[in-house]
Every structure is written in structure tokens, then in C-alpha cells.
Length: 486
Image 1: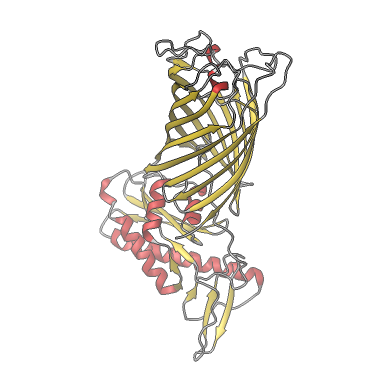
Image 2: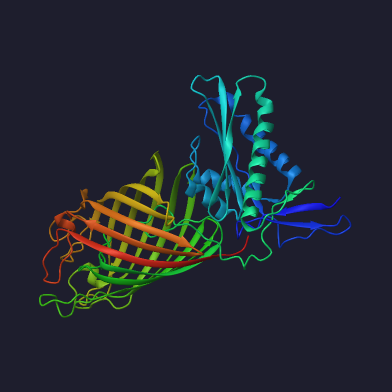
């Protein structure tokens, strides 16, 4: 009897049946599909059923091996990524499941959970199977009484998963050509032979976008460009006048270590009352960051060094005299809860800026300090049609210590800017709306930031040398990221 093999060309999301004589080696495609099996999510709210999660994973793997030929994704990698992305005891969003597939290079991700019924007399098992690049298979729910038969329920769940994947494969195959169901033999989950060269690994943007930092977990290199229409750097106020700024950014990730660099080109504003000697000066920045993750929270620690090309020798203000600056900082976030498809989180950060300025009348440089904290409440929603991330944040910053007197008086006893103390003062509300879209290693970003009520001690100047009580700007950016190594 002839032996049949069912191939799942995942790139084309279709199925092809290849028949071979018993004495022949079966026809194979380039490589087997990779299947990720995250541990089932215990949503019972009880500690009595934790043993079911690993039992389910083992039963599914055993049943899959009896029916399919496939490659299983690295178990440690799957466990590591799910711990970072999935909230304990909560059903993951579609976007989080897709990100697991991307980060573990999986073609299938089997996602399941189990919970107690309302009367707490049954365990309900729910399972979905994600099929790259953008499809889900729903597996019928299974209810089992809370008794000794729970040990057999794992095999029932595994059987339903295998049946659902097989039925889906046959439906996909039928879309291309009518063919009989293969009799006997194993179903080979495989990538299509005609699949084009695999594109660079896509890395989704992180939900934290205020600092521009993005968090990845594998080795990758990125390069991009950003343009700000009316920019002023709030926590250091390097620029006295808000103006257009273009930057070229690059970074390299080695696991949780990130090396970064930036070339910044601000535009000098024009206006009748702006001093002719004034100029927004170019700068370059080098830095290093490291990430830590725990459950649904993350923190990035970093330090950078920024050098300014040519400080204004005639300047009267520290930001015009700067030769270099260094920032020690950490920023982080923690997931709060979901409201339907909207995810709420809290972001926070603190920056300690050390700046060096050299006035024309001095032969030595003076140091200036600025220390502040920032906080935002964010709401994120993954747009289902264009598969982009939409975020809305509301926050502020608080100056803890400021020794950057506008009158350039080096005195650690006076914490003021233009005779207005900034120590212990909030800078005003900050509202941001951002949209991020990733595809084939490219992330496009558009962001709108509005400061509706800037506190007087923090106000930049307009092109008529008048303080601005409000400010808004757009950011447009693109970055290309390529993963490397294992």
C-alpha cells in the first residue's frame, strides 16, 4: 500500500499531498515546521490544579509525534519569552501569541488554558493554535468533571488538538486542489518547497516609546532615522528654543545588553529677536543599556555620553555653553490590567544629567546637574486590520534637583531657572499618541506629543523670544532591524 504524506506549506498557508512508493524515500520539503508548545495557563485561581499544566504539554507533544512530523521549538526559549510577555493566569492577546512565534521562529504556537466552571464542578479546557503568518485555529472546548478522570482529560485535549490541526490542513489543501485524504502514514508539518528565502526576523516594537528605546531578547542590529517637527528635550532642556531635529540612530543587542549611538542635527530657529550668535548645535551620543524582566514588568538601566560639536562661546546660558553631558538613568514599566483588547500599563523613569559648560570668560569648565523623575499611564491597542500598535499615554515629569541657572551662576545653593526654582516641581502634563507598524524587519513610527500646560520654570522660547506655555510636535521615524546569531 502506498504511503502518503501531508505537507503544510506554511508560507503559502496551503496543503499539498505527495504520494510515494513504499520503497522510495518520501518527498520532502526544505525543512519541517517548528511548533511551539507553551505551558498551559492555569486560570482556575486555585493551587489544586497546577499539576495539569505540564501534563497537558507532555500529552500534546506525545500525541503530535504519533500523527505529525515536525520540529519542536526550544522549550527553554518558549518558556523564557512567555514569562516576559504573558501575564500569569491571564489569557494572552493575539499580538502576544504572534510575538512568541516571531521570537522563537515558530510556525505553529499551541496556546491553551483551563479554568473552573461557575459551579466549580468542571474544568474547562480551551485551546487555540496560531498558524503563521496570521491565522488561528480554534479547538473545541473540553469540559471534564473535577474527579479522578482529570488525569485522562489531558489525552482528550491532545486528541482534539491533533484532530483540529489535521482538519485545518485538509481544508487548506482543498483550496488549491481536490485530493483524497491520505490513508495511513504520518502527516508531515513542513514548510513549502517553493517558500522564498526567509525574510529577516521581525521584531515588534515595545510598548514603551517615550524614550525611543525598544526592548528585544535576542541578538540583533538596527539602524533608523527620526524627524521631530518642533522638538525640545524636556528632562535636560539642551535646546533653549524648540526646533526641528533630525537624528540617525543605531544599536546592537546582545541578549539583554544594548549598545546605542545617535547623531543629532537640530535646526537653528530664526526670528528677529533671537540673538544672532545663537545656534542649536549638533551632537553625537554613545550609550549602553541592560534590560531586566520579571513577570509583566521590565526595567532598563542605562548610561550615555553626549558630545556637542561647537558650544556657543558667546552664550549666556548653560545649554548654549555645553561641551558634553552624561546621563545615568533607568526607565521601566509594569502591566496593570486589560479592558477588553486594551492593555493598561504604568511607565516610569528617572534621569540624572551631568553637564559640562565652558564660558568664554573662563579657562575651565563648570558642571551642572539636573535630576528628575517621569511617569506615564499608557493604554495600548493592537489594530486588527493593519496589525499596528496604537498607544495613548498621559504623564508628567518632576524635577527633584536643578542646578542649571539661566544666569550662569555656579551655586549649588540656588536651584532655579531664570530665578524660578525647579526643585520639587512638576513640569506640566504630557499627552502622547503613537502608532507603530512592523513588517519584514522594518518598524515605522508616527508620534504626536502635546504639552498643554508647561509650568513657567520649564517653558522654552518661541522665535520671538517669548516663553511658550504649550508645545506640540510630531515624530516620524523608521528603523530596520536584523537578527543574527542563535
